Length: 172
Picture 1 (cartoon, rainbow, N blue to C red):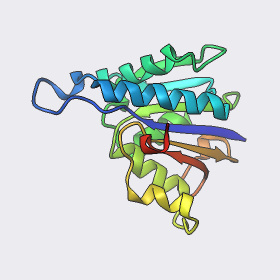
Picture 2: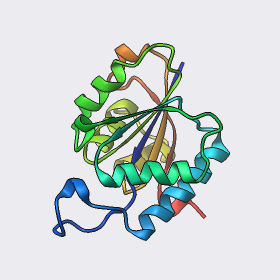
Picture 3: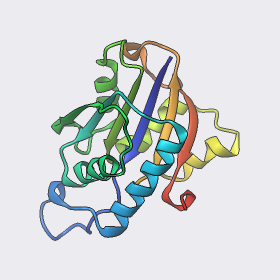
């Protein structure tokens, strides 16, 4: 059994002030990431591997998680340029390449790729209210946790069970 956490970066400055890749988090984005780190810690979510886009806003989201002392043991962190604005298939390919010894992974990335991957993994049947919430969007600093019963290399559509979907409005 594997655990997968998909986290969209915190709220960033609007586009237009420079290259998209270099947009930093706004204060509200940092605060949401810090609150999310507290919720993750309370839920016992401590990934062994973190795959993170090289964009400034994803790196700063990771820094906010680190500053909140999310991890008792430091995870293996891979900053991957290919995760910048990656489509869902490319994100899934990165996960399929994980070693079977990795029990828990966190991806910090961007929409629409993360949202589309989360929808695909959850499968077409999302009748329960907590599962249907993911249909309504994937706002900044949203996090979805999935359990995966197949090997990483076989991860595919409908291949995961959504455990929780947290958006910043859910957090105190």
